[in-house]
Length: 80
Ligand SMILES: [Zn+2]
Ligand SMILES: [Zn+2]
Image (cartoon, rainbow, N blue to C red; front, side, top):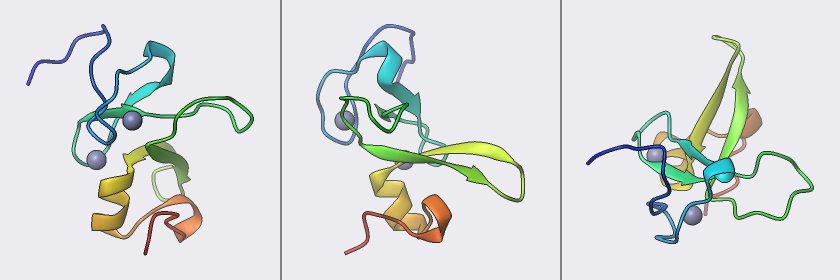
C-alpha cells in the first residue's frame, strides 16, 4: 500500500479522508479519521491520548484499540 499526502480512504469506515482530519494508526499504520478538537464536527474512527510512559501522543484506530485493549485513560471507548 502506498502512502501519500493526498486523501485516500479511511480503513475503518471506508469513506474518503479529509487531510486535516486524518492520522496514521500507531499499531496498524493505516490511516483513519481523527477529530483533532473536542468540539469539532468531524468523524472519529479512532482516538488520541497521551502515553504516560513515552509522554508521546498516541493515535490509534478503533480496531486496534479493541485488539490491543488500550485506549484513552485505559478506558477504550469501543469495548463491547
Ligand atoms: Zn473513517
Ligand atoms: Zn489501527
